[in-house]
Length: 326
Image 1 (cartoon, rainbow, N blue to C red):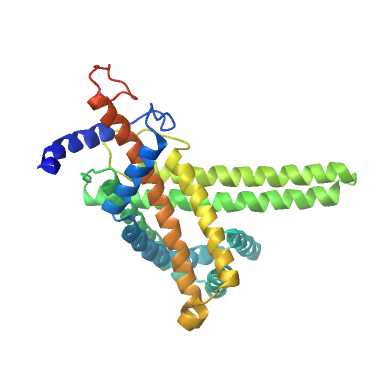
Image 2 (image 1 turned 45 degrees about the vertical axis):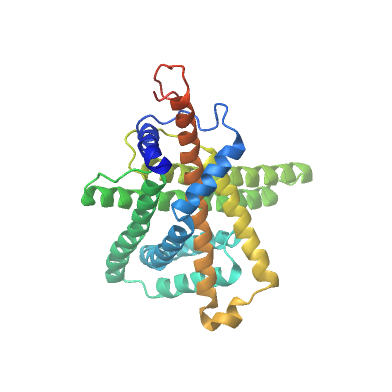
C-alpha cells in the first residue's frame, strides 16, 4: 500500500524535473551527498544500467567499423596526406583504448583506406550514419528511462535528432583528437625553431597544455550535448559541466586506465577467446564508456529529483523559478 500511495507523488516529482530543470546541478540545496549517492545506486539497479550499458556497447561496436569505413573512403578519395593525418588522430585513442583493441581498429582502417572507391563512400556514409544513430537512439531510450519520461516525439523526429546528434558527436570527438595532435605539432615546432633551451621547454609545455585542455573541454562538451539533447524532457536547460558529467568523465578515464593496466599484467582474453580477444576487449571498453555515460545521467537526474522532493515536502510555499520548481 505504501508503494501504491507514493506512486502519484513520484510521478509529480519527475514531472517537475522534466518541466522545471535546475539552473545549476552543483547547488544541492542542502541535500547530503550520501543521499544523492544512495538514490543513484537504487535508481541504477531499477533502471538496469548494467544491462543498458551492454546494449550500448553492442551498438557502439556495430557503429565503429562502418564509421571508419566511411571516414577512410572520404580520406582515400582525397589527398594521401589527409589519410595519414587521420591515421595519426586514431593513434591518440591509445591513451584510453587497450593496445590490442586499438590494433584491430587501425588494421581495419588501413584495409578500408587501401580499397576506398566512390561506391564504398556512398554505402559507407549511409551505413555509418544509420548504424551510429541506432546507438544514439538506444541512449535516448535509456535516458528517457532515467528521467522517467515517455518519448512523445514521432519516430521520424526522434531519428532525425539521433542522426543530428551522431554527426555532432563525431565532429566533437574528431576535434578532441585533433587538439591533441595540434598540441604535439606546435610542441615539436617550438622544439625545432626556438633555440633558447628554457624558452623552448616553456613553449612545448604550453602547447601541450593547451592541446590537452581543449581536448578535455571537448570531451566535457560531448557529455553535455548528450545530456541536453537525448532525453525527451519537457524543458531543456544547458549545463556545460554537471556533477554527473564530471563523475562520468573521471570514471571513464580511470576505468579505461584500469582496463589497460589489467590487460598489461593479466591478459587472459587472448587465451580464452583466441583471435576474437581483441574484439572482446574493444567491446568491454565500449561497455565501460556506455556505463559511465549512463551513470552520469543517473546522478544528474537524482540530484534534480532529490531537490524537487525536498521542496514538495517543505511546508513553506516558494515562488516558482528555474531552481524552485513549484
